[in-house]
Image (cartoon, rainbow, N blue to C red; front, top):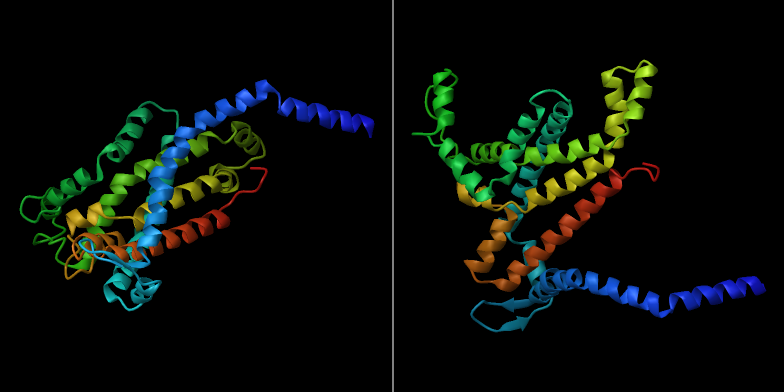
Length: 308
């Protein structure tokens, strides 16, 4: 008992020594800029948005507290419900394709052959292009008069008249999905490539010795050990899809007849066209909660075992 008491005394004295206090202060000063940044650009705006959602606040008038009335009105807003449904549809179509293509590209690009580095750069290059610039580029590619896509399809004899890509909601959605896959699959490839390269080569060598072929190694080693990478990629891709704005604002303009309006577009319209800041803030809070629930569900389902 005496030795335990002496040990605790030494530990307490060490923890309160001037040298340790200086280290704690230095550590606090190192993280202080990050804490201030998070508080200024996330915590405070989030709290302010939550308070704003409880008010009837016209951008040119004073705020009037109305409680949860804005949230109750969301259930009766057909445009909000339609935009949320369309965004979910876009997410369900685009995200699996982005992840699947990124994973397949990572499997191809992990090979140590001549020219692989060039192809990695080519596939990743669209990621560094701004989303607005990429959207304008594909608007030109889809043009029915001078676009390269219609010209190629006509030359191959696959179509007889140019396709009006943005005249219907389904074609407009397809056009945006193709563009976003081209734009973001390189990022998913990079994440999967890093995950694959982190797998110990000894596991593959042992599997080869035991007679496992490529597909068995893929199903029994690569995919199970990439669960956390799949979880991270899905969270990032799903979050980005639900926050889609630029590509639809530029390529489809929300048309035809507001059938391709995303939830973020709707928030923008309510806040800066109809000037209903409180109502727009309530929609933003609902979107935040939905993204939080979806992200936690994905991480829970695809979580790896503690030994991985």
